[in-house]
Each structure stands twice: as C-alpha cells, then as structure tokens.
Image (cartoon, rainbow, N blue to C red; front, side, top):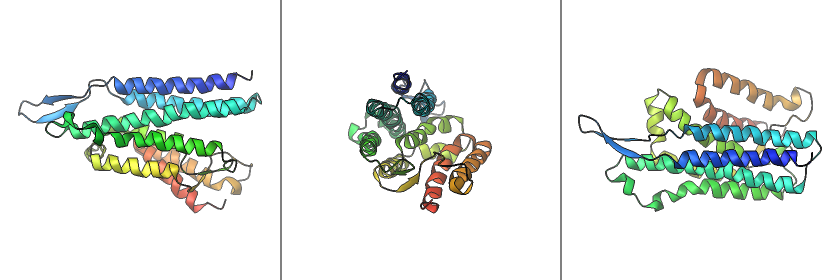
Length: 252
C-alpha cells in the first residue's frame, strides 16, 4: 500500500515524458502561398503536449491525495514527486516555449538557421522550476501557503499556449504567441515568479468556514466564469487572478 502513491508519482513522470515526445516530434517547415508569401507550419500539432501535461497535473494532485488516504507519506515520496514535477512542469513547458521561439524566428528570412543562443532562454523555465522545488523541499513553512509560484501552476500556464494558439480565432492572441519579445517576457516573468518569495495561497482548505477559505472560494467562482466565457484563454487569466487574490488576502 505504501508504494501506491509512488506509482501515481511515476505516472506523472511518464505523462511528462510523453509531453516531451509530442513536442520534439514536431518539425517546423517553411511553406509559400500562391502569391509567394512565406509562412510557417508545424505538421503535428504540439497541443498533445498540453493534454499530457494536464493529465500529469491531475495525477500529481492524486498522488498527494492517495498518500494521505493510505497514510503513506514519506521522504522518498516527497523527493520522487519533485523529480517528476521538474520533468512534467519544468522541462516539458520549457520545450513548448523553445518551439514557440523557433516558430517566431521562422517567420524571418532564414529564421530556421537562428543560433541556438536565442533559444536557450526557454530552458530558464526548467532551471527556475528545479530551484523552486529544491527550496520547497527544505522549507517546512509552506504547508498552507507558498513562497513563489508553484511549478505546476507555471507549467500549466505555459502548457495552455499551444491550445490557445490553435483553437482561438483572435488574430492578436495568435500573433502575440509568435512574438519573440513576448515569449522572452513570459520566460523572465514566470521564472522570476517561481524563484521569488512572493506569498501565495495554497489551494488546501484549512477548515469548513467561509471566512477562512474566502479567497479560495472567490478564485473557484472566478475560474468557473473564465472557463465558461473565455475557454482556453481562461488559463492565463486564472493564473493572473490567482496571484492578485493571493496578494490581496496575503494575511489570511
């Protein structure tokens, strides 16, 4: 029974690896319209990586639930969970940003021959996530609150980019996701939020009172409204809402 939570954790890792496979199988090609205009295309859509990362997040939640259910929490399970998270919510999202940067540069003439130096910043997401997890593992004060954005939240934010890009009809949003300066900004902000000590709420309910869980209930209602009206665009909006609510209710 004590190994059941670890099996869930390993399943999280497997889905993270599947996400990486889905990302790396996509080859960017240059195509031309009948008028001679150049555009880029990815034959196999990397939105499958978004699906695998989302499943990994569900499994990541379940391994903690199962561990508490069977009273099977352990130091090994804690370390194993971090190793799985750095792959599913650190490395895989980094590679999503890496591919979007390639797409952005591919719009330029000879863009596919861009130096890897311009793409390496995408890996800062994984590095910041690993640092965040290491700090979390040795900090016993983050039971009911976090210092810095949790790596699953950062990973899910970036995992939403492929589905937003391929399933939104808003041209501005599509252009924004293919803007290299926007992507560099995302790298800086998300990495910075993970390594920061910004006080953010954990989504665990401490008691059954409305007052004690008010920010979480507000976030839940806000999230449902966003999902109904914004669909995939809800993910980044909820992410921003989570940070704002955490800061507004930081003493709760």
